[in-house]
Image (cartoon, rainbow, N blue to C red):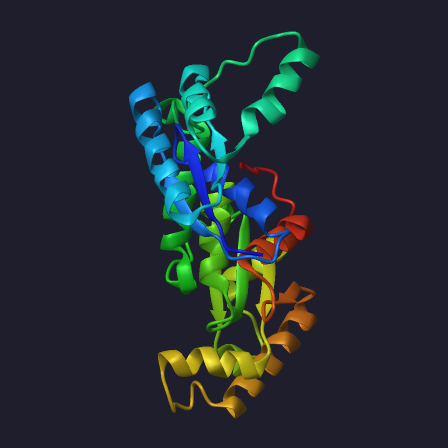
Length: 273
C-alpha cells in the first residue's frame, strides 16, 4: 500500500482528531505522513488549509486523508467543497445521529478546551500534575493521604512517566517511591507508605531490559549491571508479594496499558478524564 499524507484538521488543539484518526489508521499496514492543522476556526483559515491539502494532492497524485473535528458548518463546508481529499468528519459521523436521537441540537462548542478558564476539571488536573511532580521519586512524603495512587518499584521501572500520565490524562494525584537497596536490607517498605497500602501499586520489569535502560543513563556502572538488576528486581518482587501489593511488569507494556491496569485495580474515587 502506498504511503499517504494524513491531515488532522481541528478548530481546537486537534487532540481528539489525531487520537481517533491514529486509532483508525493503526488498522492498516502503512506509515502515513502526519500534518496537524489546529485552530482552523474561520472560513479564511479553512481556505488556507484547503490550499495546503490540495498542494499535497497535486504533488503526490493521490488524495490525502483528512480527519476533522470542525464544529462550525461554514468552516467544514469549505473543506468539503474545496479539497481533493478523503474527508472524514467525526462530528457528522457521531454528533448528528445523536442530535436526531436526542431531539436537540448540539452546542457546537469549539474545541475541548474552549472554556478552560471555567473548567474545574482542568484546574484539578493542573493541581494533580504539580502534586505528582512534587511527590516524584520519594522526594516528598507529606500529604500522601491525598494521593489517589502510590507507585513503587526499582529505579527506572517506569514509575515517573506513569505517574505523570495518570495526572495529565486522568487528573489523578500520583506519588511514586523507588525501592532501594536499603529497603531490601531492612526487608521493609518505606515507613511513610505503610498507612496507605490500599493505594500502593507496584511496577517491575525484566532485569535484562532494566539493565539496558540503566546503561543508557549510567553506562558500565554497578547500578546498570545485569547482576545488580537481577538482584533488585528479585528483591522488589519479593517485597511486593510480602506486603500483598498488586503489581505488573512494564517490560512490554505501553504507558496507556500500564495506567489502565492500575485504574482497574486501584479504582480511585476521584477519576477525571
